Image (cartoon, rainbow, N blue to C red; front, side, top):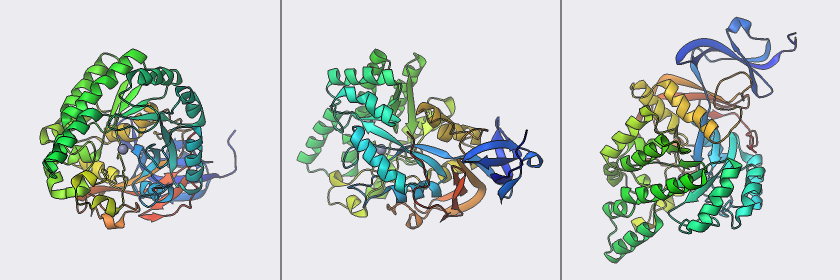
Length: 448
Ligand SMILES: [Zn+2]
């Protein structure tokens, strides 16, 4: 029997993507969840109705690689500014990385971050942890709600040295039991260090020197042992920000042999090259760095052949002073990407280089599956009412001075894009409306 009480919200005059086709439909929302998707005439009565004027409604973006900073790095970003940037970019759920001050690496640091985020976030936030000092803590960290672990092979962050194969193997066996992935930053530390000291000695401060220190071989040489440890332990691994054709090839083979390997690519590695980096200077400096045109070409074709599972921003905000340094070696690596990911990718859709369906798979469906985020990532009855209304025809220019992120600079500044998130809904609430934030701090939920 149908209830006579009105539901919370109806979205009317919408277009949805269903089985690869655009169809007209309405969405009914009750208590933060989608309770009905149907022809408008079949929707229940609602206390509020929002007419989206024939625009497309997509599942909210789940950005699996975000540095929200806060705590001792709140000058770079905090949970409010970071999640506000997310809402502005059509991102309804972010996964926060553990390389914070203090590092997220045990139950107490994780709890502390969750409790700060809970009061400030306006989109949903899940957390990654670094490895703890004691591998026995791994299961407690997962029980506390961590969605994955992060392993930096380029430097020691957390309790385990990536070069300590025995400790690492133990940790991977422990992780395997908990069925969460380990996200890998694949750059080989010792090779970075020796190349770096060589450049230091030569007093070489050039972009070319930086690219040599973070060469594609250095990425490959970390990708390989990570695959091997997965082969041994059976633990799931997820390669962050894959940037080279060689690493992709290795990942492709690992997948073909049935290993539980997934990977991500960022918009900046897809759209910018190392020659752009020379023009951009510190604003374009990130790790792994921007690569050659042939690497970009490989990444773009792997979007289509399924080797790349997801697109994530690697939103890595810094203060402008962290970027303006006398020496390239002191420049903080990272690009703020939450507010540009969706517009840049919708532009690719408009150019015919990517289908809308594929985009939704890589930015919503697959991240939810890989990171075990329940009832999100799709527009489905019973799922969270997390969605974004996009205007595919809206042509505009990226202007980083208008970012909600504290990092008001971007290598995409001034880029003409086509496609804009115009309304973002999180847990059934409108949180962004035409660039205005309509949520109050704490409306986002913590994934546990
Ligand atoms: Zn990162």
